[in-house]
Image (cartoon, rainbow, N blue to C red; front, side):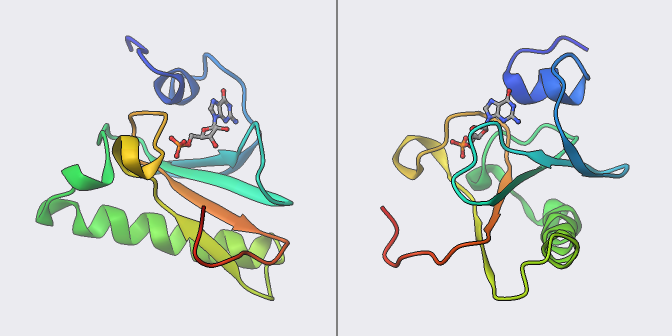
Length: 114
Ligand code: 5GP
């Protein structure tokens, strides 16, 4: 695989990560710069650049990513609640051009977000 961004390199196993979950559709791993005691990234193995590129045919996949977030929140003990974030494009704060969910927990979160 020609790995052209950091997540493609991670999916190609060229960069080691602490894996939280893997299946045929997605990989979840702990963020290198955690913003909370639990900070896991959940990304599809198939390349989708950003949230705004989702189409109806992706409904099952995006549902699956969310259900993996639910399972990981349970496994990682986030019983008090958690936050799921998707940053989309520049104004949304996205830095890696491969769709991913952030699962954050282990501390309270403010609203509105920064
Ligand atoms: P974004 O800003 O695109 O929503 O999120 C990208 C996330 O990927 C950031 O939270 C950043 O810390 C994380 N990240 C970037 N490079 C690496 C890496 O090489 N390993 C891991 N585990 N996380 C990374």
